[in-house]
Amino acid sequence: MIERSEAKGPGGTPEQKIDWKAEASTCVELLRDLIRIPTVNRGTSEAGDANERVACERIADHLTAHGIDSRIVEKKKGRGNLIARVKGTGKKPPLLLNAHLDVVEADAGSWKHDPFAAEIHDGYIWGRGTIDMKHMAAMSACALTLIAREAKEKPLDRDIIFAAVADEENGCALGSTYLCDDHADEVRAEYMLGEIGAFSLHLFGRTFYPVQVAEKGVCWVRAEYRGSPGHGSMPDPESAVLKLARAVERLGKTRLPMHPTEVVRGFIEGLAKELPTPHKHVMKRLTTPQIASLILDYLIRDPSQRRSFSALLSNTASPTVLRAGSKVNVIPGRASIEIDGRTLPGQSQESFLAELREALGEAPASLEVIHSLPATEASPATPLFEHLAATLRRNDPTGVPLPYMIPGFTDAKAYARLGTICYGFAPVRFDPTHEISFSAMYHGHDERVPVDGLGWGLRVLYEAISGFRG
Ligand SMILES: [Zn+2]
Image (cartoon, rainbow, N blue to C red):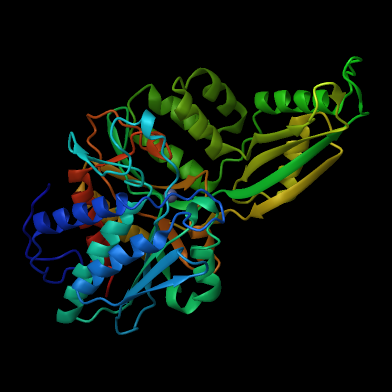
C-alpha cells in the first residue's frame, strides 16, 4: 500500500483526512462478500440465473451504513440493478460509475482455489469476478462513500451516480440496456467510467495503463450452404457439408484486411515509443497495413499477443456454431455456420459482409445478419481523459496511460446511446514481477486481484472523481 500525506487533494482543494489502510480493507471485505455471491450468468431464462439482486442488496447495505440511499430496479425478478446518487449543485452534468455484477461460469476443478470462496493467497484475492468486474463495484461503492463525506464539507458541482448492473455477460438486456431504456433519467451522465481499463500492463519491462475509449461493433452472421440431399453410401463433393467445411477452412486461414483506426494507431505508436530496441521498431510497423501481416506472423512470437494485436487492426470473423445433418447415412441438403463478426469503428456492416464473403471463398446460399451493434468510439481529447491520465501518472510515475480500443463490448454500448462519453477506467495495479496475464484471466481460470493493487485502485478511482467534482 502506498501511504502519502499531502496538504492538497487531487483537485487542489484541501484533502479530507482519509485512512487509506482502513478504506482499502473495507473495499477488500466488500469485494470478498460479492465474490461469495455466485452471480453466474448462464444466459438461461430460468429462475435463479445470476440473481444479481443479492449482490445489489449487499452493496445497498454498505451504502446505507454510510448514509447513501440507493434503489434496486429489475426488468426480471432477481436480476437486480442498483442505482445510487450523491447529489451535487447541478452546475455541471453528472459523472457515472458503472460495474456489472454478473460473472461467467467457473470450472472449479481447473482452479487452484475455490472460485467462489474469495480466499486470500500470495497477496491476491482469488475468485470469479475479481477483475471482471466486481472489483470495480466494490471500489465504486467505497469511493462513493468517500465522495459523499466530502460533499458534506464542500458541495459537488456535479452529481456522482453509481450503477451496479445485471446481465452484461449475456448482452446487457436486463442490465445497462434496460436502465438506458426505462430509467434513462437516473443514469444519464456526461461521462461514464467503467470496463475495461486503467489496469497495469507490463510489456518488455515497461508499464502501461490502457484506458478504453473505443470498442468494436458486433455483426453476428449465419451463412447457409445447400446441396442435393442423398444417400451416405454415395459421397457428393458438392454436398452442403463439404461446401461448409471448405468455407470454414478458408476463413480460418484468412486475415481480414487491416484498417488501423486513429485510436489503435495512437495506442501502438504510444507503446512503441516506450519499448526498448528492437521491439519498438517491430511494434511501430504494425500500423502499416502492407507489412502488418508479416510482422504478426513472423515477429510477434507470443500467440495471445498476436491474436490481440490482430483483433485491433482488422474486422474479425470467428466461426463458432456449425449445424448439419442428423443421421449418419443421410447427406443433408443444408448446413449452416454461425460466425461471430466484430467490426472496427468506421467500418459499415456492408463493408464487413463484403470482406467476409471474400474470406469464405465458397459462396453461401444465404448470409443473414442475426445480431448487430455499432462500434463505439469516444474522443480522448476531453478534460476528463486528461485528468484520468494525470491521476494515473501521479499514482504510478513509471506508468504510461494510453487510450485504446477493446475487441469486445461492454455496458458502454448502452450508455453511449444516451450521448455519454464512456471510458474504461477500473484501476488495478499488478506487481510487474509477477507474470500474470490480465487478459488471460478474463473468463479464464484462476482469476484474481492483488490486495495491494486493489487498494491502489480505490485511491486512484477516488482521486479521479474527487479531482473532477468541481
Ligand atoms: Zn466484464
